[in-house]
Image (cartoon, rainbow, N blue to C red):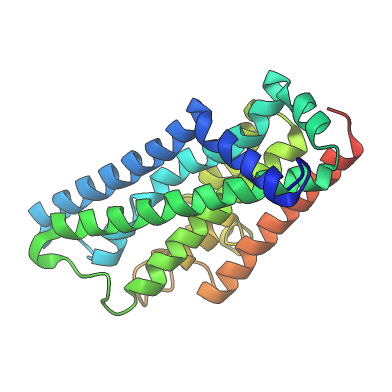
Length: 257
């Protein structure tokens, strides 16, 4: 195995993910935020169940990850942006001159780490919320739950990969977060259900993610949520991610470190 083989590059990038304190800390933060918010919401609902409108144990189980995704976005940005801010990208490019190989190894290592972190976070968040709901909770095998849980894991993973692509385009952690946070949290959260804006904002990544997790709105209530189903939501997320990764690769290939 040579130092420029795909396996060696992936191994090197994998080591970077877990040895840089800031990136591993953000994965832990995503877990804490998701499970903490999910448990608090569930306990609150259980204590005032008679006043909860449109009660949904599935919503209570996955709502926490909508906050935890913030830490995963930061995780993806730091994986790429920190190399530019520290100047270590020059060392990386010297060690692996094939930029496509370096970029692919970095994205794959980050995506695998995000997938592992998302899987643990989503399952524990859901299980913790159901335990907090007590007699009002449901199990992981209840109707519709497996698809929603898998959708949440896929969404968190893709949103992290998208963040890596944006960071590769702008080559700065601060600018990346300046682009991503409004895109993911200010543009559509709340505004997505405004009738005049919904036709456009429903195609933003976070709106597609809510639909993929089946928590975009109360079941059967057409006033909330996008005008498409989970399959289309997945296509939209993949398209956003592919566009960001392609842009990141083109910038890395054409510009010096």
